[in-house]
Amino acid sequence: MKLLKWDFLLFSRYYVIQISLVLAVLYGLSFYLLGQGLSFELFLVLFCSETMIMSIMYSGTLALLDKSQSTFSALSVIPQPIHRIYIERSLVLALIGCLGGVFLLVGYGLISSILLALPLLFLLVMACSLQGFFLGHGAQGFTDFLLRVVGLCMTYLIPFASLFWNSGHWVWWLFPGYPLIHYFKYALSGETNFLSLLLPYIQATAYLFLSVYLLKRKLENLPQS
Amino acid sequence: MITLDNVSFRYKQAAENTLHNLQVTIAEGEVFGFLGPSGSGKSTTQKILYKHLVTEQGSVSVNGKSLRDWGREYYHFIGVCFELPNHYLRLTARENLQFFSAFYPQIKQETINYWLDKMGLLEEADKRVSEFSKGMKMRLNFIRSVMHNPAVVFLDEPTSGLDPGYAHKVKEAIKGLKQQGKTIFLTTHNMNDADQLCDRVAFLHKGHIKEMDSPRVLKLKYGSKKVQVTDIHGQAHCFEMSDLSSDPDFQQLLQGNLIESIHSEEASLEEAFLKTTETVQA
Image (cartoon, rainbow over all chains, first blue to last red; front, side):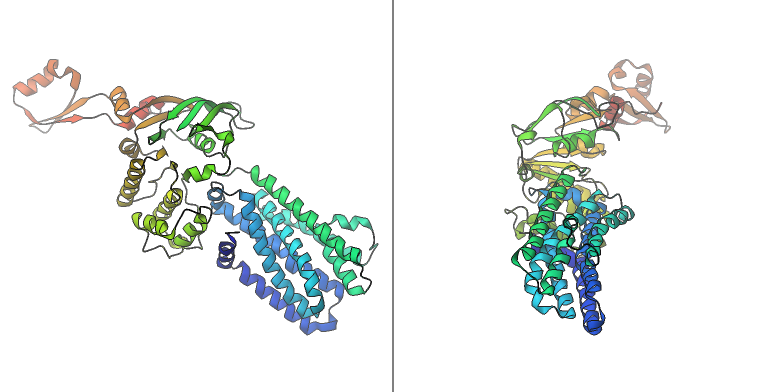
C-alpha cells in the first residue's frame, strides 16, 4: 500500500488520470444532454467501454511502458513480489474507473444506483486492469497487444446479447462482463431480490481472484531482464 | 560470501550449455571482476546470481545460504546496477529514487540526497529523467543499486557512457563501498576499470572460466616485460627485458652511448585477457 501515492503520481505523469476523467466528464455530459434519447442498452455498452475496457487499455499500455523503458527489470530486483506492485496499480486504476463511473451514472440519471453499483464496478475494473497487465506483459509490442485485446474485449461485449436474447441462460455467467449487465438489468427492473444482486458480486470476485492468479503466473514466467 | 559450485546452465531449446562447471568463491569485501567477450555467459551468470534464472546443475550460495532458500528478502541484501538505464522517464530523478525507496523502509531522504550529491546529480535531481543524458541515467542507476545499503552489489558496466570525470566519481564510489566491506561483483569490458578496481578477476570464454586471479598475477603470467628504447637518431627499438644483459643490439646501443630514452613496458590486463580468451585476430 506504500506505493499508492507513487502510482497516482506515475499515472498522472503519463496522463492516465487526466484522460480518463476528461473522457468520463464528456460521456456524462453527453448522457445528460441526450436524456431519454439514449437507450438503456446503449448506455450499458458505453458504460462498460468507458470503465472496464478503457482500464484494460490503460493497464496494458502501462505494462508495455514498463517493458520498453526497462523499468520491469528494475522492479524485478526489489524485495516486494512483483505481482503485488501490479495489484496495487490495479487498485488505483479501479479507483479512477469508479470516479469516472460516477460521472456516467450521474449523467444518465442513475444517482440512486451509485452506492450499490460502485463496489461491483470496483471489482470489475480491478479485474480488467489485471487482465490488461497480463496481456501487456505477454505482448511483443503495441500492435501485438491490440490484437490480443480485441479478443479479450469480445468476452466483455458478447454478453450484451443477453439484453435481447435468452437473458436468463446460465452460460452468460461465464463471461467476465456479465455481472454488470445483470446487476443493472435487475437493479432497475424493480424485480430485485437479494440473490440476483449478490450473484454479480460473487462472479466479479471470482474473476478478480482468477485474474490475480493468472497475472502472478505470467510474471513468474517472464524473462525479467 | 558468494559461492558458485560447479554451476552449469542451459537455456531451454539450446543445443549446448551456456555455462560449464563454474567454480567461483568470492570473499566478503572483495571486488570481483567478471570479464569476457560478448556471448561468453557473463549476463547468464549475473542473472543466476540475482535470481532471474534458476540453475538445475550445481549450486549457488550467498552469505552461506543457498539461492533456493533466499526469498524476496534477498533483494534487501543485494543491489543490482543494470547495464542499461531503466527509469520512469516522466518522473524526476528524485521521484524515481523515492519510488524505489518505498520498498526499503531504512532509506531516508538524507540518504537519497547524499548519493545524488556524491554522483553529481543533486542540482538536476528535480528534472525529469527524460531530459537526462545517458551518463546521468547511468549514475542514477548506480544510486538506485546502492541506496538501500546492500551487502553485495552487482554492477554491470557501471562506467559505460560516462565521461572520464564522472567515471572517476563512480570508481571512487566503488572503492568507498569496498572500504565499507561490501562485496562487489563487477561485470565490465573496460580492462582499465577492472585493473584499477578488482581484487581478482575471472576471464570467461564460451561459458568456461579460463583464468581467475588478481590482475597483477594475470598480467605477469600473460604479459611479456619489454623495454622500449629510442636511439639518438629517433629510431625505436624493442627488447625483451629478460634478455637485456645478453642482447648484442642493446649492448651495442648502450656501449656506443646511442640511447636517448628507455621506457619499460608493462603487460596490460587487456593483453592477458586477449591471450586467454583467444580473441586476438590473427
